[in-house]
Length: 275
View (tube, rainbow, N blue to C red):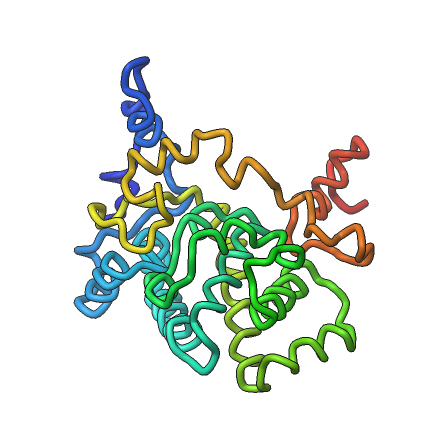
């Protein structure tokens, strides 16, 4: 049995005038693919789900979707453990790159998470706020800016230039560049998919705020934060392109709605299909 059939929000949860942000959150549309119920998972998967609830990144909801196919569940969990939580490159830089991808593809589910390991290492919240303007910001070291330039080039299909690679090799070994590139590519693909699923935090194994961004630790707080005019996802959309797009006219956003055939057809009055 899936959680979508039992515990997911339904039309009966529609908010009244006095329910406020909590009701608005509960009335949110159902996930496009259901959450597999914990009791339908084997003991090893259940333990990984509990780890997700304790430690986050990923939190339980995305894992509960992947759990429909154990091979998908473990393929991601093990790769993420090896490439993101562990490995040769410093974890804090990997989390900055992860959230840069969130800002680029507008995956709110991922963008509202923070790595507890990165937080414990001293990464300040202000560094997440400035990610799309990393080049002009004084919050980042040269090494962090180089890593974010790598993430930008992967996410936005920027040209492979000598300048980019000279910059990367000035700060990273080949082993680090392989790990970091694989991690960025993995999270780019996952976040490009997860943003379509309409999943939300505090819906599976709810009750912990582990790895949530400040102000998003409960369902009620999350709903209030997302309704605020200053909420990050209201400030920029994927169609806007990277901040430096004007200086790099060859940039082609990865998986942005404006770049899809259907969107192009809609702008021209067609149906977006090939003749």
